[in-house]
Amino acid sequence: MFAYKVDEDIELRPLSLEHAGALFNLTDRSRERLREWLPWVDQIVEQQHSVNFIKNSLKQGSENGGFTAGIWVKDELAGVIGFHEIDWNNRSVSIGYWLGKNHEGQGLMSSACRALVDYALIELDLNRVEIRCATGNHKSRGIPERLGFVLEGIVREAEKLPQGYVNHAVYGMLQSEWKLLR
Image (cartoon, rainbow, N blue to C red; front, side, top):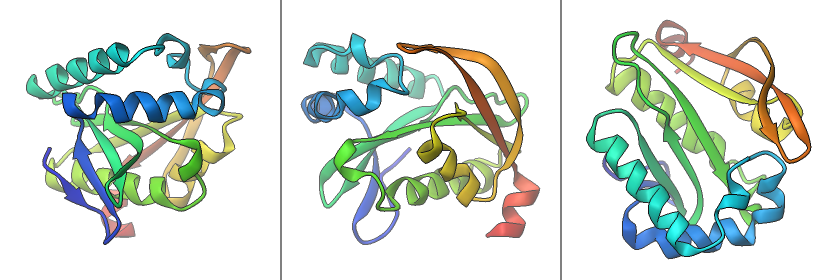
């Protein structure tokens, strides 16, 4: 993926190794908020862990299996969004995302997700995009709901978080539906 300008202030850029410091600092500053919904947060305790994450993301991208992009607001890293591994046989992908605590509630993630869904369903000609999030994570669930995704079901005890297992809400968007919403 190339850099993608969402609007005059927001840009999606693939993460590179030079972003490891900014990524670690954003994660560290947002640790308490992120810990509630993201099981990997407590494993990111030094900048090298962010380096390793970026290396794995670059490898995945080079194998045409997805990508991870930083969400940049006026040249400040605000969060991360990306495609989990693309299933080219079934032409589907799932999207994962998170924002730093100081960037929530500004519509950034809705705009970034809209751009990625457009890219997946129009540019890559995929048929389906899926978003999964904990049923209790109302902010995260608001993203697919605002974008017109269909709630397809609940997966019970899908993820183990510090507070225990949580259910996941599964949202889906089909290419035919997205074209009608655009």
